[in-house]
Image (spheres, rainbow, N blue to C red):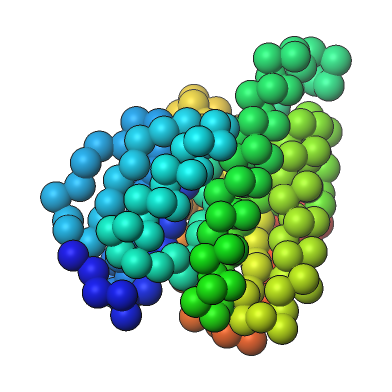
Length: 237
């Protein structure tokens, strides 16, 4: 059980990959963690509260924040890690693809961030971290992904807007912009081809993104930053 002096991080998409790594990393920092995803299992760690739910449903956001405040008394950091990525030619996207990607990537960000910021304002500060994609800034003909650029690009712009809106109220907003990371989002048989698209010639690891988020957490003079962790993709080809 947390005391109200212990900082608390909320992490979406927390059941595997980058999200699970973030839960572990924030616990090592001494934070209590509220971890949410559709399939997340209960934790044996008293400092981790898991909340199952579909982040596309605003009611899930309400439950996650309410449960975190009830259990731990505060919300200091929100990491909007939940994301959906589908690469296909623009004219082949379906209405279902559009609904799914805007649901997770935008709706899933919107309400939970509103609620988190409300609590941060009452307690005098906090930190929002959004996970975007390097394709927002560096479109690649080999990876057609308009819906990823539309949704994650929106998050990237929102990051800067939040940073400026709340800069004088001690709430920071930053983003991490990954290249291609070795997670279950990509089938294993695609790894070699995807690695060849990265200037460094390999895929990133979930820990690379976790390390970037923790850097931002520990960087109080950094806000409005889009931190590219992409094996050089943002520098060119």
